[in-house]
Amino acid sequence: MASNKRKTVLVAGGAGYIGTHTTVELIEAGYDVVIADNLSNADLSAVQGVERIVGRSVPFVQVDCCDLDALRQEVFEKYPFDSVIHFAAYKAVGESVAEPLKYFRNNLDSLLSVLTLMKEFEVHNLVFSSSATVYGQPDELPATEQTPRQRANSPYGLTKQMSEDMIQDTVAAIPFMRAIALRYFNPIGAHPSAWIGELPKGVPNNLVPFITQTAAGVRKELAIFGDDYATPDGSCLRDYIDVVDLARAHVVAVDRMVELPAEDDRQRYEIFNIGTGRPVSVLELVDLFERVNGVPVPHRIAARRPGDVEKIWAATDKANEVLGWRAERELGDTLRAAWAWEKRVRGLE
Ligand code: UFG
Image (cartoon, rainbow, N blue to C red; front, side, top):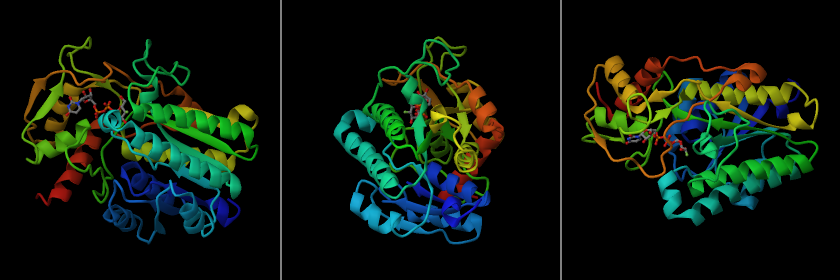
């Protein structure tokens, strides 16, 4: 890699769950990282966890990516980088239904600032944090990148669809730009060091943090949302991807753009599913967690959660073949890491 600029990555939203894990993998792959985060849904201790793992300090700027001028002055003018990974967004599906304007304002404005400044400073490469939510409930499974997107069933999902489209049109109009959208399936787990992991504020919406908090005694009981779906055991099927594997996908996406010039316009905006390709039911996941960790997770069957899709999992061939990436960690190890993290956070053992 030539200049310092090419070797440096801006990680917007880098203090969050996936941002911290990605920062670690980038640094371990030889990149320098600048983190920008407003800490609205993250804690500075997460950045300290990253620094502890990589054994050095990581430049951190507390800034709201929606604030164009602040982002320009405090980040784009001060640091040389040629790639941006954009994570800075709200992500709670239910909250987005109650407060759509908050989601539109934050998620779209922050992306607009990033794109505007990338144009202004001639920054070439963008990796965008998208989601399998853009597929809704696909008619055919596994979902491939060609599977038609359906009308989003939450404002959060709509911001992911709109963001993808905004990036596609921006890249089409700016010949020096290139972007990769990664559609994550269900990210779970924690770094094996247990120094970073998922730290939801309040009651967790997502399954694995709810499981770990229930196992830790913070929650009394896990509600399994539905056992009457058309699936083998009646509970929903998802594709659970280890957060460290997911973080590595961002590194290979940046590598691709830094190292290989785009051959044609089709390579200037690309989409990849990031999952394991393996469907796992909610009940299977709870059972595996209990078995690998030797800890009970009290649970009961409850009503379906409105808005849940019945089943979705990824076709990963494109990421395997084009990025040379595949999920490597065993689900049991991922659930062990999730539990180790929860225990460390709670000061157990
Ligand atoms: N579940 C429970 N009990 C809980 C929490 C979840 O049974 O307390 C079930 C859900 O019903 C679902 C599965 O566990 O079947 C996974 O639920 P999550 O909330 O962990 O994940 P989702 O698949 O609902 O959400 C993911 C991403 C979102 C994305 C969404 C699209 O986390 O960012 O997919 O549907 F928007």
